[in-house]
Image 1 (cartoon, rainbow, N blue to C red):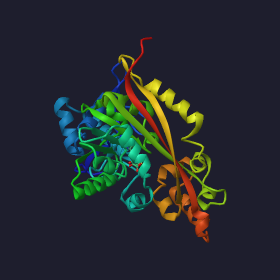
Image 2 (cartoon, helix red, strand yellow):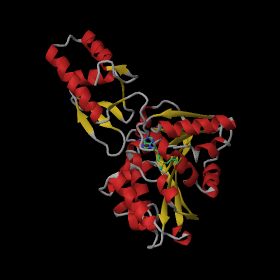
Image 3 (cartoon, rainbow, N blue to C red):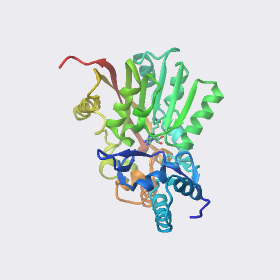
Image 4 (cartoon, helix red, strand yellow):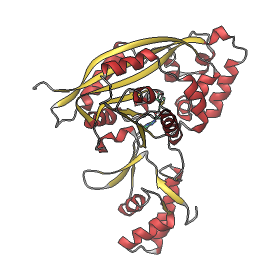
Length: 355
Ligand SMILES: C[S@@+](CC[C@H](N)C(=O)[O-])C[C@H]1O[C@@H](n2cnc3c(N)ncnc32)[C@H](O)[C@@H]1O
C-alpha cells in the first residue's frame, strides 16, 4: 500500500459506540460482524468516509492529536488489515457481489411476473402522488415498472453496477427514478419519507430486523411494505438441483418462502421490528402467492449465483461453477423446465392497539 493510495470506507460498514462509548465498526450486510477498534483508528477511519489518501487521513488525524512514530506505523498496519477485511476499499470498487459480470444474465433471466408487479401497484395504491423506495433494487426489474406509474421511485442498493444500469434504463425512458448506494440495513438513518417500501429478493442480504425497523422509520402513516421472494420448484433430475446442497438446494424445492413456517417468520419479524417507543407497527396484511412456468438454464445460473451462494455450500465459486457446468452437460431442453413460486408479504403501518 502506498501513502497516496486513495481509499474509502465501504458502505457495508457503520461506525457505532457501545454503552460505554467504546467504538466499534459493524458490517451492515450479512453476516453482521462487529470489529472493535481503538478511538484513534476510529478517528482515522472516519477520515475515509468520503474518500481520502492514506497520507491525507493520517495527516488530518495528527492535526487533532499529534501522533508518535510508533503510533503512525501502527495505524498504517491497521489500514492494511482494514483493506484486507474489505473495510477500506478503492473509491470505485463495487461493494456488492452483484457485479457488472452478472448484469446481462441477471436482467435477461430474473424477470418478475407482471401480475405480481400489478398487485404491488394495486394494493400499494401506487399512483402519481406516491413515493416509493425499492431496497436492494438491483438492475430495476421492479423499480422500473413502479416508476412508470409512481410520482417517484428511489432505488437503493450496494451494487454500483446494478444501480448504474437502473439509472441508464430510467433515463432512457424519462422515468422519475433516482438511486443511492447504501445498505438497506441503514434505513433508520434516512430522513426522507415514502408511501411504499419494497424489498424484492433482497431481505435475506440484510439485517432483517434493522431493515424492517428502517422501513417503519421511513414510511408515512398508513404506508405499505412489500417483501417479495421467489423459490424454484425443480424436478429431481434437473441439473441445477443435482449441483446444489443444503439451503441452496431447498431454494429450488419450494420449501422456503411459502407455507405456515414462512408466515410465522413474517409475524415474528414484524413484531421484532416494532420500535418500542412508537405507537405504530407494521401489521401483516396478506401473503399473496404466484406461480410461473419457466426455464432454468445455464444463463439463469449465471444471473443467480454469487460467491456467497458458493460459500454457503462450503465451496469456492470456481468449484461451484465446475459442478454446475458438469451437471448441465448433455441436458435436454425438457429437463430444464421448472416452476417459480413467488410470494409477496404485504405489511401496513398501522396504529398499535393499546396493550
Ligand atoms: C437477488 S438481487 C434482487 C434485485 C431486485 N430487487 C430483483 O428482485 O431483481 C439482490 C440485490 O440486493 C442487493 N444487496 C445486497 N446486500 C445489500 C444491502 N446490504 N443493501 C442494499 N442492497 C443489497 C444486491 O446488490 C442485489 O442487487
